[in-house]
Length: 197
Image (cartoon, rainbow, N blue to C red; front, top):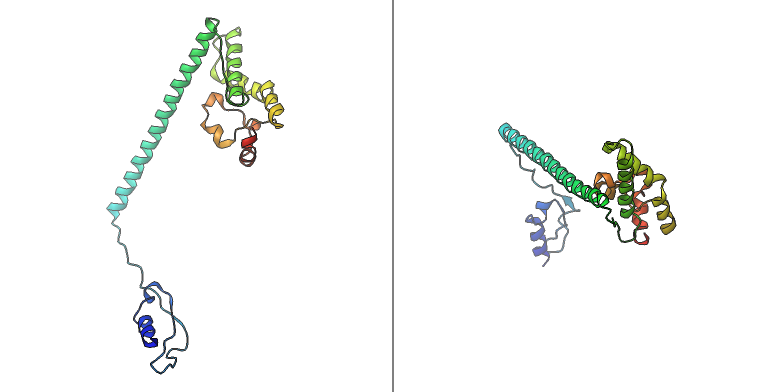
């Protein structure tokens, strides 16, 4: 049995993976090897890459990058179309004295974003210059979000004067519904307080 083990170890099993080879004994039980030895694996094969392959790979990566940018732009335009349709529906409802009902599960975060945007739009439409630009409307909405009653509702409900969005979640909101960064929670706090909001 000892000679079988010695033969197994000395015939290279384990050597191919660079493991130490155990000492071997001869048939009389004498230690043939004074200690374990390390056998290094064969060198890794050399890979030859042609310059044309590198150029083709670089070109393919450039095309993929352009496709990704074009797809992102198409998604942004689609989001703008949907958002514009939503905002036009709000304007049409107000024009015919219709009711506007906006709510989310808890009535404080997404609702706050929609209500402050609607209020900013209403103020812009009632202003002396009804053709206010979008940046001014968003400035009004963000001022309401940061200093208005909606953030106080969050404070009353959760004990924190912050909306229950973190930086990552904020990026997935359509841009007019994104709260100011001063009014959102950091990533750790939003994770900890997620189920209490």
